[in-house]
Amino acid sequence: MFASISGPRRPSPPRAARHARRLAVLATAAVTLAATGLAVAATPSSAAACNGYVGLTFDDGPTGSTNALLSVLRANNVRATMFNVGQNVQGNPSAARAQVDAGMWVANHSWNHAHMTSMNQSQMQSDLSQTNSAIQSATGVRPQLFRPPYGETNSTLQSVASSLGLRQVIWDVDSQDWNGASVSQIVSNASRLQDGQVILMHDGIQNTRDAIPQIMANLNSRGLCPGMISPSTGRAVAPDGTPPPTTAPPTGSPTTPPPGGGCTATATFPNVWGDRYNTSVTVQGASNWTVVVAVTAPQRVSTTWNGTASWDSTGYVMTMRSNGSGNTFGFTTMMNGNSSARPQIRSCTTG
Ligand SMILES: [Zn+2]
Image (cartoon, rainbow, N blue to C red; front, top):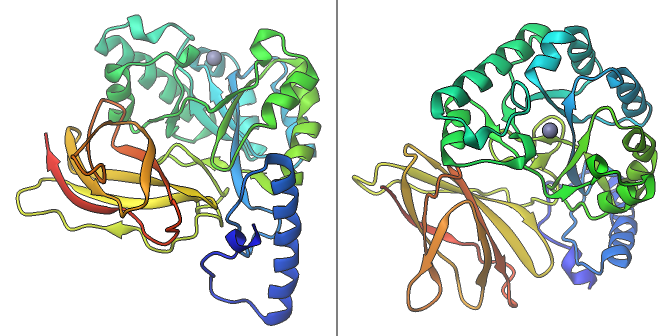
């Protein structure tokens, strides 16, 4: 098992520090293994206690209890992302300002929490831009993230958001706080969070505030730290925006666009576990694109997201087409005994 925690090394710190960190990493990895049964590819990290990051999000504020929420978050050293409703910001700009002053990231959660998929494109556009303006004028910060109310979205809404510089972020884990979950249920739901993932919670709910100290204790015990949500990937990363230490590979594999291809695809490997890893591919230069990716046998792709995948007869060459989910797609590859190979991008073409 421990073989899996000695991954690629980063530049070596001094020997004593390296030793101390390795012990810390081993201790944390042991806890994680015991807790989840999952092999974690941990590498010595300069951010001592953090093996990874998760995004804590609070929707529907600001509310009359935003200040109470901020007090709890600050007392627990938490930085979180606040998906604010535009009209609430307009009605209570000082609470929105207080979010930013407390170190929180502010993001767009629509103007008045409507079901946006029943809007037409220009209604969507005006809803999101009005919300951006309210947030920017209250806080001085221009939102880069958008969460559709109820998580309801479609390709029109995503392209409108993207045209306004907003990355759509849904969630990986639902705390169920909106559904009357108890403090212990909220804590238990949050304990499912894994590196890079995002949890849905809400401003204005007492049980949510009461759950925060226990949520943090659980995350700390697993070496996970609260992070920011990357506007380029929608995943949780370190608060300064650098990728988490478990994302080891220093190499993205930028590929040269073939002549006439019309777009560029760049791969990064944001999560590496003992038996599998995730690849995130970002396409630049086209919104309708086709990217061909080859994996090395015996590795196999097990899951894909944010694109429509098809395969050649060997099963090792995947053609991914845009499906309206934006310009970053991803997939999980099972290593099947080959832990070093990484997928090769063969081409990126428009349309
Ligand atoms: Zn909401």
